[in-house]
Image 1: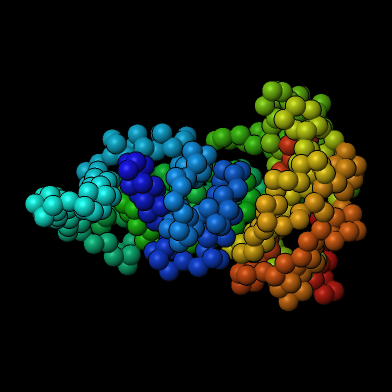
Image 2: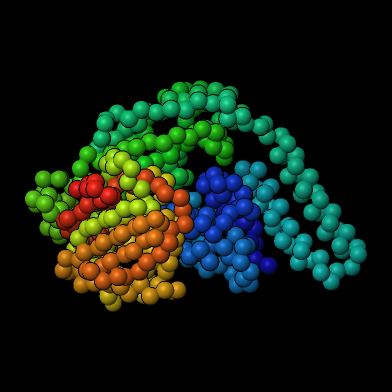
Length: 425
């Protein structure tokens, strides 16, 4: 039996800790849908709910996960690939090595148990018991952490716009470990080690949005609170890690049309080949009483760059919410065979449904309309119904919209509405 199984088990446990949703034993299909959304947002790779359930043992499946699936899970945890994740475990501190060894030995024990003599079984049982005792000793030596012993708050430097610095104030003086972290949001790669004896830490947020900042002691989230960073109008940037390359608003705003073309990107020192840059355009603001269960959204987009790997002319529209997200792809009709929709807990992919209605001639203006009434959502592309579904998550407050273009893009006529209220962008 491959040792990968124990590493996969360790990986799923780490993901559970990062998410903070409790044990996966109690997860529902909605939780796996939300995890799929988080993975897609972090890695741009779509792992279906079925795939995730197989990884977590919720669906019986005898085949090994593909290396692409394992690489994606490792990248979600902030590693380059699965090999890098395995290397980290192999060089991990004692606690992680004990957990890793325990998983491997138990897997091998199950394999060895069948068909063995009583003497062999006794040896296997003794080995497993020895590891179990070692695990208990490690766990019992770890002091318990009481969240009431910690304080955590923050203040933003500017009222709006990005980049924006946030000053965190914290008290972690009672931490039983030096592993004290401040995490910007749900993403573990945005976790920074801080001194437990200090009380201030300043962090930079490069994109606007609604975030849940966390104070982490060891692997335990002890305090968290929400941060709302508005954009102060449209923000356009070439996505880059760790710092995006912002474009000048006066260059891309052409009256009521926002447009970024190849010339602007080249002028910023970015080549369009061989790797196509990802253009992100965001607008986040306060929109009182606008929620995911009842609203109308309209926007018109265009992407006329289709050279090289950008042949699909893909545009992904994100409706950003305080505790949720709606993700809708628009792209060339030739490329509708590998897309998916994520909408407040509901998920569907082109492998299981006809999503060809989201294909269009993207070199021309393409209109997207989303209508949701009492949790029933309908998607219209250029006046034709592309799909409809029923939301699964509770209503969440909408805070804005983000577009991701392959290469270049243009936007106009963006607005949200509810009842008699219209929010123009």
